Image 1: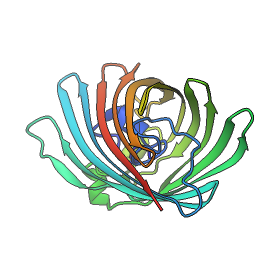
Image 2: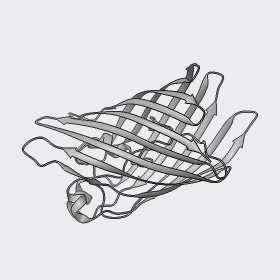
Image 3: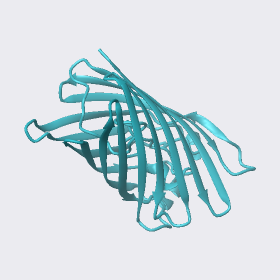
Length: 266
């Protein structure tokens, strides 16, 4: 899974980062996705809790989010997925906290190249995000027009683990004309995430990327860095922890802590 097509207010540019791809993380807890699929008739359920703190001069917003995603393997190389998230936004007092369900999304992942000798694979990941109401958009709980994204994914397995890389693009559409003018709506992300097998059942990951800053008043490019750890007591169960921090976002400082559980079954 991977983050939310929610309005960038509150939560800042880091919140918008998780548009690419959407709601939770296909390889929790990372932003960068891998090329792995579930196989024909395989299923994956992911649930997470994200706490995002966004600070700028005079303001501080806290967003609590519980994203849910179900992925179904159609063939060995093709997955379909559906998901949504529940959010609670706590802005700087005296503003009122907002809560509710955000956009529902439908996505696919197609691994179109898989070279077993070199352990190199590529995949495409298109996704469509369905609109919420205009009232929810005003409250920061999603976008009231259909948005979409597409990504090119790469995975290179190594003797120590794997390296994943993504090139993502998204179009974010608002019903509110003020948001359309204030925000960059065509967004890009280039990211890479090496993952190391550090001990039996344990993985350590570093995820970093450059992305479009949605705020037209800020510089067009910013970045993020994440440290993640994954514990897998079995091949069908993962527990994940990640800490993400934005970089080069002017005076804004955004940090997210994410906790996730992934289960697989047939």
